[in-house]
Length: 270
Image (cartoon, rainbow, N blue to C red; front, top):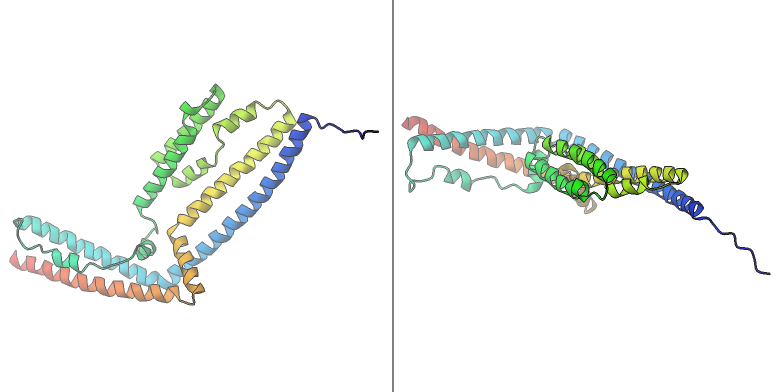
């Protein structure tokens, strides 16, 4: 006798599949959040170490650079007031020739906010373009999808105008318009509820991924990874940075004395 085969109804199969997807997504989210939290804690601890171990040298470097820029500006004004001909000796040549050679790595660590406005603007612009490709209302297939995408795109525009990179990252985690339209088309209430839960978890996953990508691009995080690499090779990143900052300070002082000498010559002439 043939064994009886119990047919699984389509809605029941959908519920089982979504339940399995839901459990898997929850586990992935827990792991992703733990990974993000662990790296954030490590980078924040490293940031505090930078301030404690290098803070005085960083402040001195910034102060000397600011003073040097001030002298260069004054020299430029003196040059303009003196109306030098084009073939005259450039009083700034020596200053440019003796400019302190510094690496991108050092510029990243000694910047006051550890990120330049140019970098922040570039990040906001990239995010804005990505979001516009996803949420532009012209891409909507129906009225409900269009209304949703219009609301999201409005929030994106506001965040971009305010250069709020954090808000743009949050918006990047929002559901795509197609997912919203698909959810609205599910007739079974239980399946729709499970699907909503799954989409919420996936939304949170995308936000965590965005936060992790942003953390990987953070200047301090880059330095932290560099320090880890050197420590693994048996080298001290802290000693290297301390030595190089001392070198930059010394070179900047020499430049500053030269610029101040040039300024004093203008004052004698005047």
